[in-house]
Amino acid sequence: MLISLKSVEYALKQESQSKTLLHDINFDILPNSVTTIIGPNGAGKTTLVRLILGLIEPTVGTINRKKNIQMGYVPQKLHANRFMPMTVQTFLSLCGQQKIEYPFDISLLMNRSIHALSGGELQKVLFNAAVLKKPDVLILDEPTQGIDADGQSAFYGKLIELKNEYNMAIVLISHDLHFVFDCTDHVICLNHHVCCQGTPEKVRQVQEVQKLFPGFAPYQHHHDHHHHD
Image 1 (cartoon, one colour):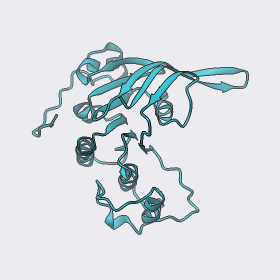
Image 2 (cartoon, helix red, strand yellow):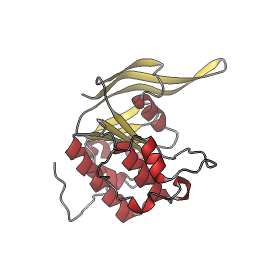
Image 3 (cartoon, helix red, strand yellow):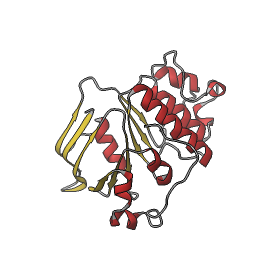
Image 4 (cartoon, helix red, strand yellow):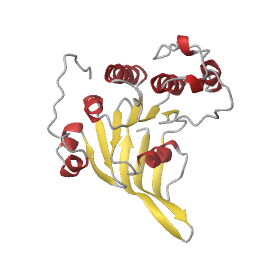
């Protein structure tokens, strides 16, 4: 077990009242597994990721992490100062660059300014930065935004290779349900609480999920490549 969330609740204090963003959150993150968090906009997905990372503390409940756990994080957006020129090379050195094989080849981007990159290029750089330290858990918030369908397919393929190679747990927030369900072990449907969780097949059948993602349930993805367990 890498991380375990038990009866977690998170409330924001606003003046004299508090607003509960998440409640009754229970799940475990296991090594060499892919957990996907799905749910509508404003459901608390990014708040949940911040709790997992330890950036904020739960109001109620406990989050237990393996001792000396290493975590990598690929945010949805990079909030870098636009007035501070920084090349990709400099950015990676700040992340503790070691001489490793990057999952994505970014050799042509090294001298470019981080602000001049396209969405897809930036995602590759952020992803490479997150895996530098070979984390136990890699958390990705909408990792394929700005990447076309072929690129998404290649990205998820690379993700699975890394997971198997490093025995890494991967936690994804994603809207690419068709892609993601193909490579996921455990799905958590979140709408301020855990509506349901389980295998993709199980979650696909749940009425609340079918309501949240109309047109998704009956879809079957057929492809000509094999997934290795």
